[in-house]
Length: 207
Image (tube, rainbow, N blue to C red; front, side, top):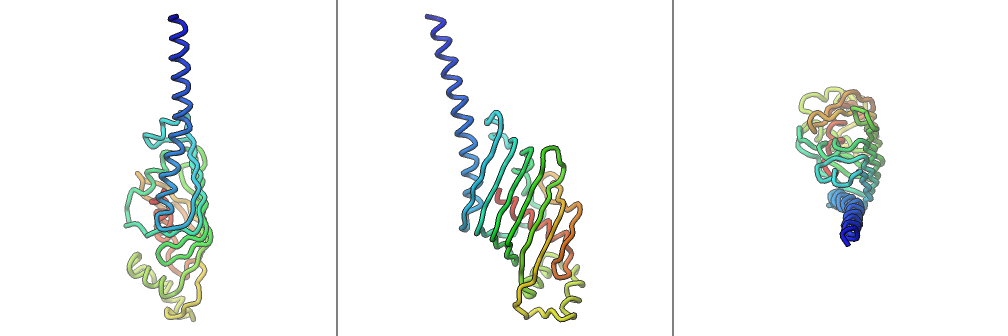
């Protein structure tokens, strides 16, 4: 009789453990999807952790995000936006057709492999000269002489033709804050580093 009771308890514990291994990742995934689609669009998120209860403390093995037609606000500078991502060993976020600040993003990728200390961010987007000049004035201040030089070369700030924006950057999380380690790209003469940090933070803030 006692042996049967022990077996029954063991079976119940196994069932509860299996149930939590399914339920907790599903719940965490749904929370991330809700944050991503708060302003519209669609998203699919998968999180993996063994045991799944690690997710309760913000740790996990892998998070994979796919989304499209999303809209994000630009976060205030200096926020701890990478906190939720930093707990995962691997990060794979790929989103398309995103609108954030002055940028219309065709493709955005944010990845970090297991054991890697930085995130790689790749983006192809567009904006208009007027939107970029407003962004530079409010976010970058006086550090956009190259941008005004580009205007002098024929790109007028009242011209509404799309300006291509491309960035390939390595971004480090310093206690959750985005710090650009290296970056290359073309943002109509604007400095790439602060824009890369802002855009990485805009996405990470929703995850």
